[in-house]
Length: 449
Image 1 (cartoon, one colour):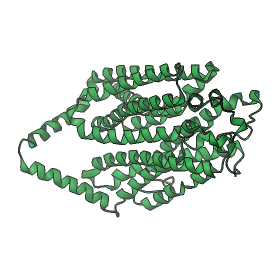
Image 2 (cartoon, one colour):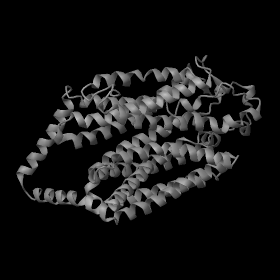
Image 3 (tube, helix red, strand yellow):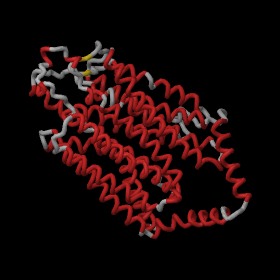
Image 4 (cartoon, one colour):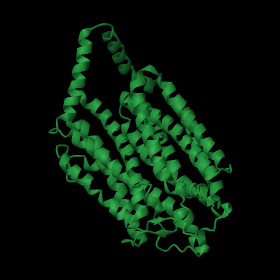
């Protein structure tokens, strides 16, 4: 019994690590914000232009201004497309190929990113070539993510481990960034080590995955699914009833989604809109917030802020709050006094989701700097106020999305719950893509107000 529990725990640990791997690339690319800004700086002085003697607005830092929004759009659009294609081709490509190749590919992309920190590139070349690397690494991540969620459904009892791993992935990226900056004063040296660490992590993950394949307890979990697959292949041999039943199931899924009384469509809207709002301001807007005590003319006073403010207050705080929200959702979805939203009350979650629009205004009214100055008088000059807003922003994101993901399959008929769960994942990715597009609009608004 003890051996069985130990083996089951190790399997959950493996899926936890794989879950971390699905979001590590995104988190590791958005976290070292200061490094990207250093690499993307256009030095007009080297071009013989005295920016101080001219209107600085005529010499914009275009690559800096649209770095976060462009990266969000590139990653989310690629993620949406590749998740869809992977779902269609999942049965035609072996499981090991869908896991091992992406993991090795991600490791290679991080190695390339580490090498690029040492190369002297023009801002335009660095921007373009890094975006290509981002798109390639996102393709591998999407294949891994779609395969992982599908395989998690096969194995059973590992979905919480996958979700937990994704949440911890963001925290890990922030902690590694803090460690690298404490070890090196130079942003380039810190970034070089920062990108090497996830490359090593991905290689180790490959070894963990391959070792898991050899566990008897893992193989036993797959036996029932392999038997079902054989039966499905027999049905495809020419039985008309099988095709009719398949079409009937598709019609049933569509009717379940369109039946607004059961709440499935409403929960799909919640998970979609939650990430539209989140990606609309994070990281594009929030990374431009500077602390109220920042003094540009006193370099000694800015060592902490230049190196650690964005990493700790923006990325680490958000990822920590988001993880807290995900964990808390498990308590508020259980029957009891803490269950303020029940499965048959999707309208309450919709109201909660729409209320998060207020965060767009709140962040816009913090110390948002575009270029060298703030564009409007901030409402919140206190760093504490910004931290509180960020905490609430992260907690509500994790809680709303997790509640929606948990309740949608519960309110669906039992025969369609697996399909509804898969559809929720698609709407989640669609929300990420919509938020990436929305961030372009908000970035332009932040520059004009």
